[in-house]
Image (cartoon, rainbow, N blue to C red; front, side, top):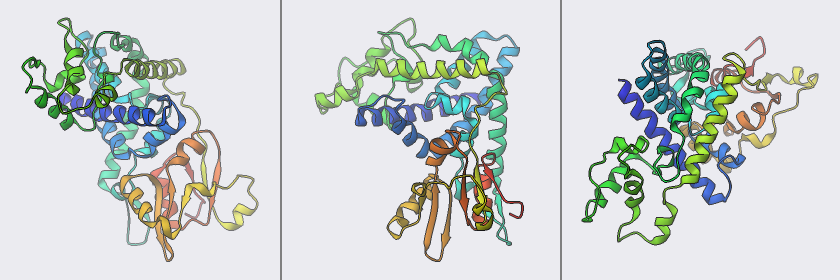
Length: 355
């Protein structure tokens, strides 16, 4: 089971890192640019949920390896965990409260009972339990991960899995298969080797770099997918920086986020808390198809149907508003939608007493 969890973490995280590089290149910005970070967080609820599911047993095994003084096993697990958090180390290490909300998928994790009250589905309850365990375990092991992290630093001239680029894992198999049509093809590496650093025998960097050197591909494509040494180093530096920040802050010192207050019209009149900016609320007729697509992909903190059509609040508020430490209020939200919102963002939403 641990090997399966390792594979799930590595392939999911590699897919997300490739997405980050694609958007950064397209916009000609660094990987830490706000637009890239926001795009990655808003569009990957399912990937984040999968990563949490895979990381929890790896964190448990990592703790056990430390207590058992198994150095080799500890480093293998630390390697997988560092790859797992690599798409957004700050979110996975220092903003777990936001990560929890980003990983929630409304139509899978939440339902309503006969009385219209929001409740978790069995899948939702399991995910919430995993989130709680993840938060506890990542806090306990952050300092030790920071100690092990330097072992995975990319070295110029050698291969690091932080530099692998692909859409889905099937793309990697396709690259390897197509490469075998050439007489000088390297055949002694397997799919698993893509997610492990360069070994003493070397040759892995040339193997990965050779995937796009095929007759049917243009030089422009080759350049686009050349092994990105600087990108691999940037990814690693983000991991190391976030681990250092979490380790120095301690296991119980998360950054304080803002809160979203759900209020009635009467209560809102006397409240000094500013309204949630309308740009985070989608409701026009022209946006109905987009709202339904966003709901399906987990891009909303809440969505609900009204006589006039669907309304949704986007997950952009998690980073741009609550993540920035700002308190805001929403007025007149239907009680069922308010209940759903509370379950989607458990520690970020404050409800009226009568909801």
